[in-house]
Length: 85
View 1 (tube, rainbow, N blue to C red):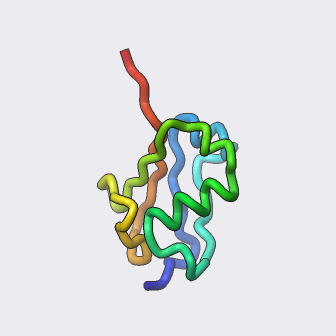
View 2 (cartoon, rainbow, N blue to C red):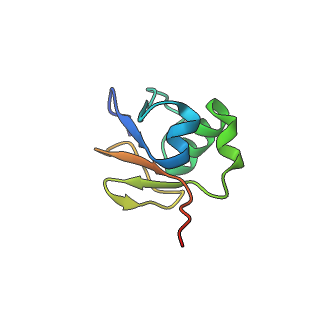
View 3 (cartoon, rainbow, N blue to C red):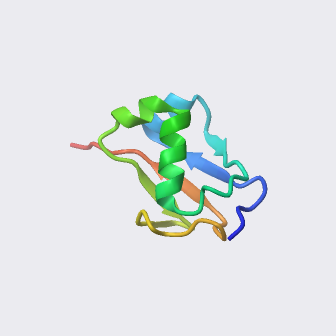
């Protein structure tokens, strides 16, 4: 699978604060094939993300499991843990 050139990851909540941007450019890296690979890349690039209790990834508007491929995705979003009351 190929990563779409210029694919962006939408960031929300504290993940947006950690990165300092609303979106993150996904590199054309052949090692990033699945949600799991994407999480590893994010944690390497932004170690503070490891302080979050969980990181959810939505691929094309649906939460995706770690083994979900991302190569043909039109949209990826990083969803940090949400607290409410």
